[in-house]
Image 1: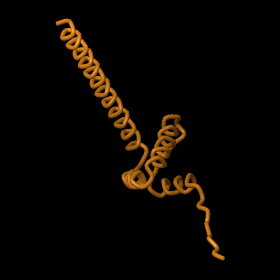
Image 2: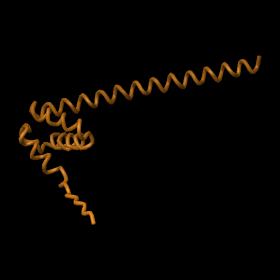
Image 3: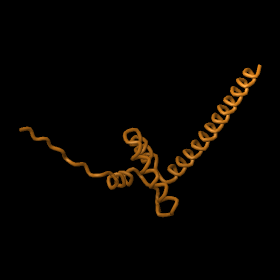
Image 4: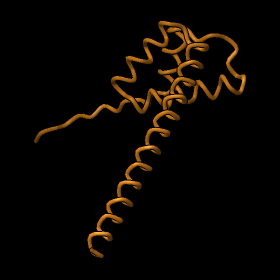
Length: 110
């Protein structure tokens, strides 16, 4: 009987731990979702529709780079350094300045 009670206690503790982990994950998912909604709201305020579409296409190809660009734009907007809404042409210029230059690689066979 003692072993059975001990086993039940272990199972109960494991179940409680799993439930707590699940609750924490749900809370974290909600926090992440709210943060993403805030980012999107700020981007809607500072970018035109065409610029947002270009940034979305960039996110598909280079997610880390697009997120870094978004972070920089949001930081500039929050610090008050952006004076106007960024259109597609301005975003292209920004992306060209931030994109590292490509190096030409040539292979010579002997």
